[in-house]
Image (cartoon, rainbow, N blue to C red; front, top):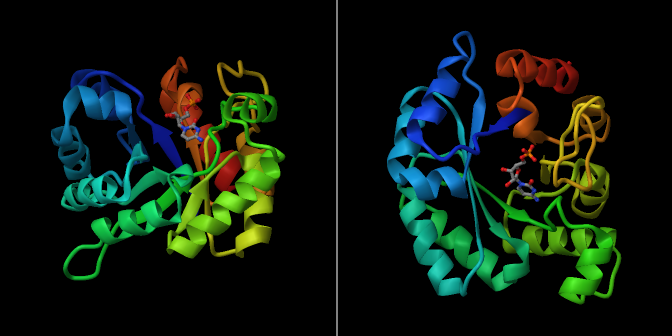
Length: 231
Ligand code: C5P
């Protein structure tokens, strides 16, 4: 399963729905992040799902295991396709997340863990977070922890997809933001590549925000991503 996920980083329901209205002939997989969820609540999730989109609910939970388990239980009742936590929350927290997310009938959305944000450079990780390792070592370690906890994959930069696959096996999913067209601005992202590069690196899902949402023609930008990534 490979796909392009659009990061719908908007702050209102109206903005989001009128953005999605432009995609008349396709139903892209969309990511709902903190901004939209905090602004509109669970209702926006239900509304977008009812329109036929798959949803990655990107709330990046990171708290004590019991709190994460209970929060995930609440999220399990929203019919999303993917959710996430921070791997930095420990293996115990990730196991609790998985437990909370699993419905009584045994079904659950995919659960993935954020390794290191794609806006974090190795220098900032070492200096600010006092992690005495390379970014590659940290990501491989966090990915192995996520796998040990039973998660389905990790969020990482496309540049680290191969490293994660080597550490955890091909079927362990990589979800990769940090995508920019070659001719565009990097914004605040640091560890980036373009959609065709992400395809070559073997990632499963690319998450694309501003290169689509801020484009003059978002549908054309999305289709360009799909063509370059999926071929
Ligand atoms: O606009 P842009 O393409 O940079 O959006 C990337 C999206 O992916 C944002 O919603 C951001 O929160 C998310 N993300 C990320 N890096 C991670 C995890 C999630 O950029 N490691």
